[in-house]
Amino acid sequence: MSLRRVQVTDFRCLQSAALDLDPRFTLISGPNASGKTSLLEAIYILGRGRSFRTRRLEHLIRQGAEQFVVFGEVETPDRRIPMGVEGMAAGIRARVAGEKTSSLAELALMLPVQIIDPEVHRLIEEGPSRRRRFLDWGVFHVEPSFIGHWQRYHQALKQRNAALKSRQPRAVISAWDPDLVRYGDLVTDARSRYVAFLAHQAETVGRNLLGMDLTLSYRPGWSREQSFSEAVQQSWNHDQESGATQVGPHRAELSIRLEGMGVKDRISRGQQKLLAAALLLAQVKLFPESAPVQPCLLLDDPAAELDDDRLAGLIREVSEHSVQLIVTTLHGEFAAFGAPGRRFTVDAGRVVPH
Ligand SMILES: Nc1ncnc2c1ncn2[C@@H]1O[C@H](COP(=O)(O)OP(=O)(O)O)[C@@H](O)[C@H]1O
Ligand SMILES: [Mg+2]
Image (cartoon, rainbow, N blue to C red):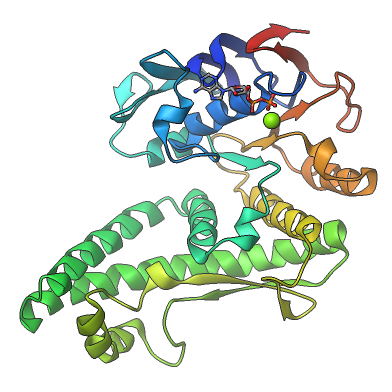
């Protein structure tokens, strides 16, 4: 099952565009600044409720318009399920099957979307929060109960931190500890299980794409010699001084090593891009075959980023798995992924079938 239709209104430079997508491979071509990335961004926001380019919603609204709308239809065996996202300066509103969503996780369940774009190296280069988000998206699709545990953990953390900051008595602060530890342990267990699977996939993809030994491990956000509960107890003075909880899954890190060495500041930009692409592909490959909707993989101008050999490697990795591919390219001709089921050209914000 896949995203079969997307309609975009007042999103970036796209005033009004509608695309009927192929379940396997759709190719979008057009000159620079025509709106190719904006189209992928619109699809991404439909599945994630956020952009990969900016946190500021007002940047996404077409200049002069009040709000943007992205509408999609996901095909299931018996019907097409509509979903939509509206964005205005005040925030975002989403609907799935005609009902308002209570959390953005509902969008993710309907449309699991992943992107490899020219900024993909940020996954390696930036701080751990980006890697935690990467991890959590994957965990959520393998274990849907994860999102509830994650939310309960963050609720407890927020309350505990508020109590620490306003210098409440210890009993008031510690009242949050049982929830913090209970849900923190559940989040940690789910992430650890996932990283064990991911590490295995990443090793193969890393070898194929980078020709290097890629190893992943999960650091839970406190010293491994202790339980989380012990770590929370021990961190008390530190927490009190700093006014915030210093240990826990919110401080976790996905540790990435190439040929046994840490990657930060050690590898070239080109290698960072390949490494990040390898991680994202490993995640797509790990996507459960039993999931109701196949993952939708957006590739933004891959030909500009990768040489022919790397591109061939990427295609091999992708073609082994059932994914819906939506690819952009500067040039109309793009043979690398075989013949697209559908093609579109974009020019100055106008999208036409090709
Ligand atoms: N909020 C907006 N309103 C109108 N135009 C925008 C907005 N945000 C970006 N643009 C314009 O959209 C154009 C297309 O951008 P983009 O999708 O990145 O093009 P491409 O990927 O085809 O190179 C750019 O010229 C940019 O200035
Ligand atoms: Mg672009």
